[in-house]
Image (cartoon, rainbow, N blue to C red; front, side, top):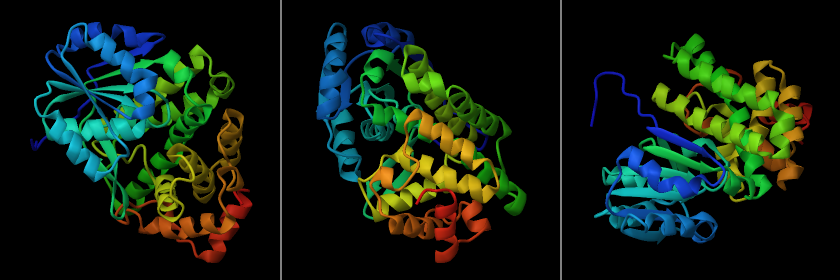
Length: 348
């Protein structure tokens, strides 16, 4: 449905806590979601949490399960067909599962519940989905989850690398909002002060809580999960991914095209944030030190990448969403300055 006025779509309810998965049915009751449920997961996340979700749902709902392989257009089409006849969809997994479930549920005009099994990036609560096409991943407008259920015990037991990647994605909001403010100053782009403030505050909280976050205690996990949800809400308020995605995301998407499956999304964004903060003239060393303390990679070697791949990604990044003005458009790089940037920030 098209609106002439500003439209914001936010999660109706968020439940975060230990063993929260056991409270799935009461949450659905609050959300007034009834009828047939379709659980979307992959093989791994089904074993981690999907099976338990199915057991809980079966107490009150007719339930079906679909397992996906990857976040591709083909999988979205397949799950869209499977959604027919379902009254609501429950995505149980990481970013790929949630993005497919989010888009397929939108295609069928049914509500969607997000149940992340890892705190790896902010897609758990945003209204956008990253789907792989012929030319790499593209960000597609979907709809925000009707509700989010984050079981901190499940997330605590996920691989630490995924958790650290989520922190990198949160910290990357610093340069994303700087890019958006730059676009307003230079190109006259309209910005959303509220979403920028929320996005920047979310990143600062994680920066200020590095010690707690790094321990992955109950408190640390809650902070990261809430920050990821807040980031998704910021994008929903803005009606665009700009408060959460700037030059550092362009760099990450370029890496996906050049060296697919090497790094996680948030890891790559964190690496990009170090360099983009330097280009903005900001405190890139504090960004780097925070990522180090959390345990996220800060060098190409830690991501298993050759130095030349970083240079190529920096040069290719401007080709990603060229209509989105960032520091990469403001201060174009050539091969020499790209190498100097990566060397100065000690990424290579």
